[in-house]
Length: 153
Image (cartoon, rainbow, N blue to C red; front, side, top):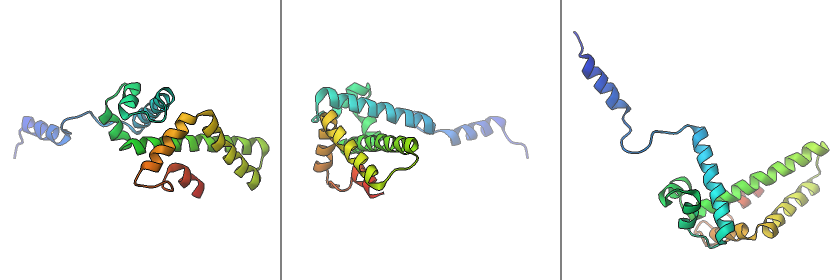
């Protein structure tokens, strides 16, 4: 039984249709977008202070609010992602120290972690204020955030 090549191509094309919206992005493109949005969130908080609005973060990033909500969920999600980045940066410092010394005592590791936390508070108080205020005001609670989760691991 012969098949219709036009019908076959139409059926194949219909099976690939995603509907409205953008085509799917690669994991690398998604990570780059998230990183760019986080950079903008840090810049907006530093520019406008800890009470920055999602509108101001979106304007800093050059995107709409729905783009931020799609990526982070809500303002708490932005704060949580910022906290994760800070924790990751702190871990890199700790790993660099470990590599430089060859080993690191638990008391030294704890001291470095505490110093890194105080560095955030004193060197970047707007960022700390934004993260803390959004975590505190979230219904998810103060203990369910990136900084606390990292300490538990």
